[in-house]
Length: 219
Image 1 (cartoon, rainbow, N blue to C red):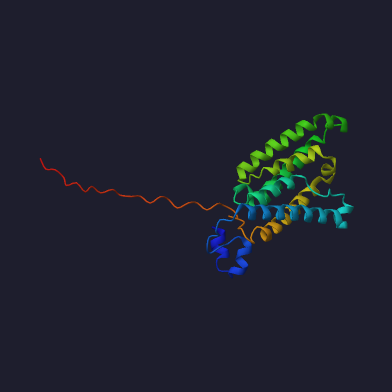
Image 2: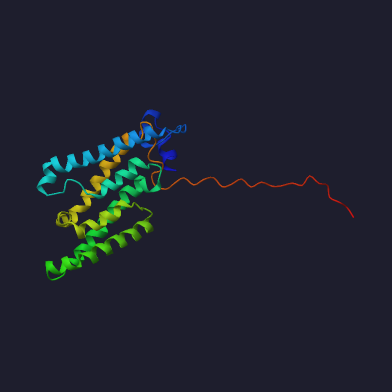
């Protein structure tokens, strides 16, 4: 496990912010979970909008204030932090691969002779993008449901489509910001990530050898 191999030697005050615990955490009351879910989701969406709305670098490139699919990611990354779909591999890999597939397929459809023809077939581009991205995420073990919307957006949103390949670094930065907020918010009274790359496999069951206490009967 990456947590044990890399993070265990670090001081406890540091390794805790990367999801490592030497002693398992006690179960938190529901209201504690709800408070940190609200705080995390609010902070994440606020940070994303602040960066893309206020930084002139992004304003000049007409980057939308937020990629809408990160609203759904906030539900996972701050609300159900134990789920495999909410771990860093899924967050980064799912969104990036979804964006990559969406841009590639949309650009292929943009080779159609007219914009009007593209508009008529945008439903097909969107459907192919979502379906293909889902299979790609399954193959790479990066399934993250909100990334299905990330794949849809190049075909369905003109603002996203106009970004072209620049959509990919925007998605990577959005994932990095959501990740940074999660490391802080989710490790104050909870623990995240549960794993970084692959989940911990449970130990194999101990084989019990049964011995008979009844003496053998000799004929």
